[in-house]
Image (tube, rainbow, N blue to C red; front, top):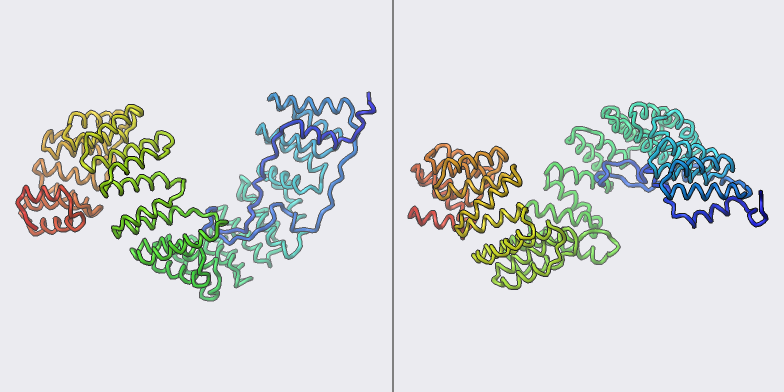
Length: 605
């Protein structure tokens, strides 16, 4: 029975329902990326070109909007709409879906079909969602949104034959000047299909009429590369480059699909020789040189980019990093400070200055300019690097003799969660230990272990402070607790084994502990050093020398040099021993182990 008050059109009641119900929107389609094909998702070797998100929305002639049906809202229709929504809200998606889909079929309103698709998608029911999307597309044949969902679903279900007519139509209707971008979109859409071979076959068929377009060849190159056919991909990219010899996108794609990285780099270099203004290619080439550790050549390419655009942030930062890499700290400082100044003048740039600040602090530390280190670290903004930067500040302040200020800085840090809080506790204990304030360091770690009794990092630090204070029972108890909590923690075995070997006690047990650590981390130079030292204590000088030389090759550390020097000294190779001790003295003039070893052996360097 109809009532006069309820004789309204269906679109009106749908608006009312939308405001009444907090319904989820359809999720993004993950439609073809809004960029032409490039290298990788993180932006390396990518030629970006903004294109339309929807297949055909900008590439073809404007489409006529689908008219909405005019239907009377009966009590029965109103009841079904509301009951479907209530059922869905109460968790009964099936009832809501079936009711909404039935109403869509009855009223021929595409929005009800869309709502049915929303319900099925929220319930993660792909088959039901596809059925609703098919109806939606039937009811709104000109809807770009419906077409997008339809294409996505049929391709994900590997029903490629069903997708072919629509894709063929879209390519055919596209304007010539935008058909190339549409070809890229089609390739990206088909890349989502499970059957890669069938998807590529369809792509070949779709693009067959347009093979005189370089974009079509590049889409085929991307498709072939996605299915693992590098040779076909390379052929298509080369053909695209022949069709358009100045195409940066073709040059980038050819480098991408060339499996031999040296050959890929040469192809980019050759393109730059012909087209020196090709900035995207130069950027890609420079990054490739960085990956190949050809830092000098990479610096040259970024310098050329900077010459053309003196305020280019990417080039400035890259040159700063590369200059640090080759120990050209003066140039690094110049580039990085310019980078920060340009970034400060352009606040709309969404770049993190923290890494540049950390590098500048590192440069200042190399120069032993602690004032500059503190200046740069103080500018670190809250984020991933903030906590470690503040800890570094505290360590420097403590080394300058102001222990109270250093500890206050650590106490004022807002550390979240166990990981950050234990970092701060360990840092405070470390600066106390370095200042030989062992009792306060033990108290800090004891308090931390009361809060986190099974934290292996705190237990290890506690053991090391106890070891320095010659409290061997406490040290051993803490290290064996770590072995219980983390049986594969090589550092606990190594620390206990080395401590026994250093004291020349329980050498067989020390050997077993270090041997276990070495099996867990066979290439760790410090554990190798421990094994060399226990071999020395056991009188196995040949084995000791071999292990210590190998450890020093891996890590030319001052303490390894001290151990190796002593082994050589005892073997009678005194000149060689003194050479290693001098190396240690150069690396760390204040090394306590070196001083005590030279004093014990009565050696003057």
